Image (tube, rainbow, N blue to C red; front, top):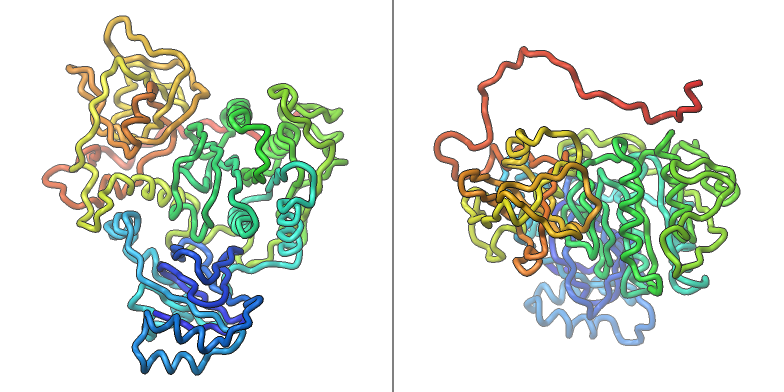
Length: 552
């Protein structure tokens, strides 16, 4: 479909498509798409805020718009509809081409009954959806103009402008931007928009993931360092990729081992060349109270932060302002005042700035600070979508039928080739295989060689901090032959370096076990042979909202 859009006109929609700008300029989530650029995939599922395509003013065009458009449209439209569109052309108009999109990812997700309507409007938007346009046949469902996509407050725009100016060279050294705020305040959306806006002016942005529960480029439970070169035009599950460096922490929260969390982030930062001048964005968890706030204080001290962006809502601060003045006397989890940067403890190549710019952003979108209640909008569903997206890489790139995971041929991995560890709880060695079978495992690389003197399995006694290259499903264990059966999309050349399988608290989505086609007879790994009436003790809880001093 070819659309002529006038200056400042918007198209807010649900669905998925490829967008090509044929004439003029449009903007999507901060990224500018211009005439002559490649096609970009747009994903606007019901799980997140709908995408909006907005027409921008065309700069420096001295040509006649109708003559230029006529030459462009000859390739896409016959004479009659082409003349009709040309009548709409103004000097400030833009022309976009929307094409249907079907990928390895979308085919895999749509094979599950519960996800078949993922790219359709949620129930709350049905009255606003337009179902009688030619765009519907492309997989695009427009929403009426009264529906608001991304909502930017004045402070939101001012912060974006200030940060982009810093990244364009208005400061000495590279910008290191630390983004924090409570849950459901819009940190991830702000960061995506910021990355896209920066990519209008630079070739890449470095991204340090510190949010275990809502990761951007990997399944949940990971800390990672990525270099982003392409715009992010959809939610996390639409752009899963392998980071340059990654650690599998194994849990969606760091409450059980905050020291390992901080040490893992330091490990990742060491992997980044200190001579790089690429802007860095650091994402954080939504835990801004008690020990969670102390972790934020530590992270600002650990890294050479140039800007701290603190997102708030309702005009009320959810935590103290993390200004340079506050940090001089603030108590961290590992660091203590007087404020001395902890970065010097693990690098000799960089002198961090003594101060930084503090920016406060007021989020004013509808439903701020509240988790979505519609289908696909809860945080646990977002985590499952990201993991399913990762597993979709096991499918063939050909647009053939989806193959269930149990029909794929696994790798055979000898017990003696890899160590097996559990990172989120204590498991007796005799129960380790029961815990790991049919589970997701991180594929990791220990620095030391794995040795098995007796030819049996090598079991780790504690959680290591080591590189992770991807994930696999441990779909079977043969104790007699001493083999693990592993499904993974990781390239064999990289798998040769893997000598450790780590099991965490990130479990496979239930639909992988219950909803895949092709099962005959009893479904593996599932049982109904237990009583729902049994009661027992729940998991023990640790209090992380106050320090030991607060208890006296």
